Amino acid sequence: MNASCTIDTSNLMKAQAVLDRFSKTIPSQALNRTVLFIVGAAQKNTPRVSPGRVDVELAVEMMPHIGKKGQIVKTRKYSVRPGIGAGRGPHAGVPLSFLIIGARANPGSNYNTKNSGRYAISGGHPLKGVPRSQFRKVMEARITRMVRARHSMGGFFMQAWGAITRKLVPHVPGKYMAGFGRVGAKTNPGLGSVSPAMPGAYACSCTIELNIGMDGTYPALAESRNQAMHRLLGPVLQSAVDQEFLSKLALAEKNGWLDAKPTLAACGFTVNV
Image (cartoon, rainbow, N blue to C red):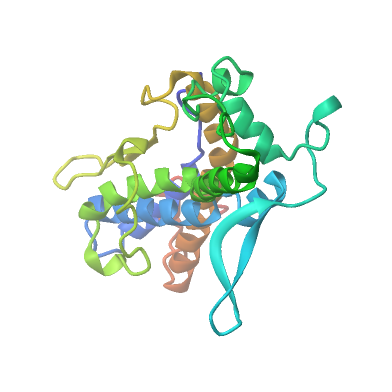
């Protein structure tokens, strides 16, 4: 399992050093603020599965309901779209949502094995012992619960950024919190950790960690979750770091701080004399 990945922050740190020479903000707060901006940008650019894509893949649609005044009212109840099957052989015409429910109800299915039984349905198949006339009603209720759960899981990786933001906020001046609001209020704090830069230290460092797949929850899913985190969030985080570097560079250039060649050389930039 990959426990860490490398993000290149060398240019960002050089730009941070330039700004620190002219900024009135103490270095520890300035660094924590920089990390907060990077996390915010990464969270905005983190890919997520849209509810529409979930509906298409499961071949479901929201059930319309006619209100008292004749208007169509959204009920947030779902049913399968007719004529769309995902099975093979004798099950070729069975929708994917039906197949998943059947696999979840089978304790020995590959689905339950791969997911460590997290989504297993106890008591056998939901249609077991149910009159045929009630089949549709029972399955629509089960499908609705599954679709709603999958809609809420689309932003799973974004919650990790929220966990980091929540822990980093107390170490950043309040005036920089515009746009973050109550970020992380409903996230699992175990998904991320922070070691903020502290005032009074000779050298400042701020470390953030995404702990997806490392918390020991559902061991069978840990490897795939951790790999997905590195595959999806690594490039997003690097892009956010590069974006923050360009932002700092633009600020330094605007204020004329890049004109002093000795300053640039002292901060690690290559200066052509």
